[in-house]
Image (tube, rainbow, N blue to C red; front, side, top):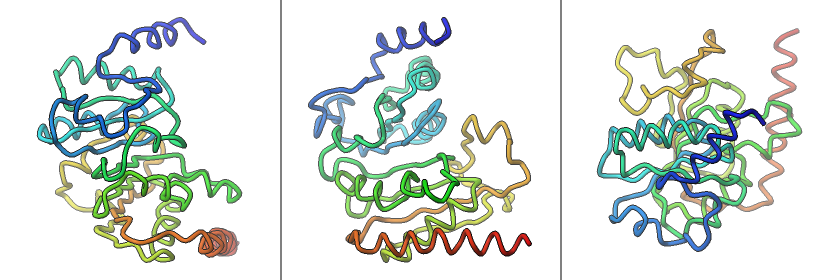
Length: 240
């Protein structure tokens, strides 16, 4: 590990807005923020551009960026402290155990901004909008809570739409080309570090917002798996 990373790992331990694997935090986030405002998570937040950006837009709401990589969290946490954004915090932990930190109905919204699409078909269960993760979120997300997905991966976008259809989840907003409009909402105008690099500049940016307003029976996972491999087959055939 480089010296710079080591220094940042040491520094975030002194940041009042960063918690690393905290214990007994379920139901206590309003005590941490010292208010009763709603809580929004940015999962796999990287440098926390969305947690910080949303914190600027909505001072009456609380935002928590979650990621395992302390070197990246350092940047967002530093920005939040510099700007005195007391409504922005960061949680260092794996996404797989995020339910350990929040109680039932404690979170109002979740943002997934340019998450790893895990393109090999065999890795579809690792996608942050797979049934496995949605069941995790359902343990702490409010019944009418919204999940926001912003991605440049058409595979992840179409996969997520299929998941919502299979489980009968309510789609709040669906935009397969965010920047086709001259006026983009302030929320969607926020750019992550990855998006600002414009690595995939020739691709569209997709946005999907939906609610976890239904049960997610595990027997339907086979339908999701079937979609994944049929979609991959169709994609392969279309390129011939």
